[in-house]
Length: 255
Ligand SMILES: Nc1ncnc2c1ncn2[C@@H]1O[C@H](COP(=O)(O)OP(=O)(O)OP(=O)(O)O)[C@@H](O)[C@H]1O
Image: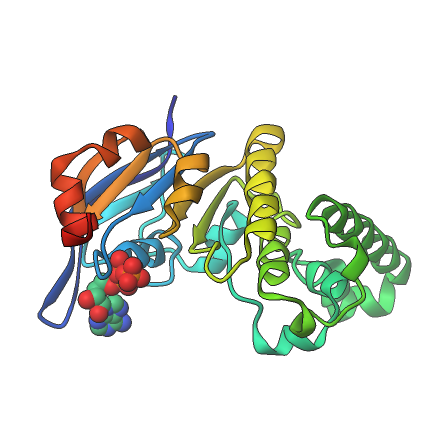
């Protein structure tokens, strides 16, 4: 299978601190690839570089063969490369459904011209966005709280809503950054199921940073281990868990 994300020889330093060192990873189209590693290994930095939130010092990033190095996040969003974000403060005062309806880029109603001169077009688009938002809210199991303010949802429900926001666009690749953190086991099960369904039924590719090893074991194949800013090893979860180098670097004395 082809790599949908291809990170080639990336370097990144903050001042004198080299955080990403000649790092190359490939994320295969249609995979749910895990990215793990000890604290400070550079996982979030690499995510930010891929997602266009942080410039790299050298190297290249390709999306489906097209170079996207240092392209801004909003351009990548339109190309179908998304990362989940915590529900921002201003959106916490909107309902769960409204949060979904806010996502689609370039709605016709956003331009004054359309709002004044093409009200029927705007109305049609709004109805379509609402229909899709209702479908998404059903899919993520939050129909019963659709009219609650997002700020009042539980931590796990907010994570489901974050995932739902990616479904309002035509995403191809979604970067999930510690989506399991602080989510109770029941809702975590829902999250995992939804990620698997998005992968299987809608063809999403995922790159997942996660400290929760149960979630990695259940979802991810392959798993990439990052240590000191470069790839230490890549393989199935069984291969990773039995690799002495990984046990030493990642699990340390605790293992
Ligand atoms: N904006 C920044 N300025 C300076 N140093 C930074 C910055 N962002 C990250 N770092 C440093 O880069 C290193 C890697 O951080 P990063 O957050 O990428 O690691 P991580 O693998 O995601 O860690 P964790 O698992 O703890 O979240 C750390 O030493 C961190 O202090």
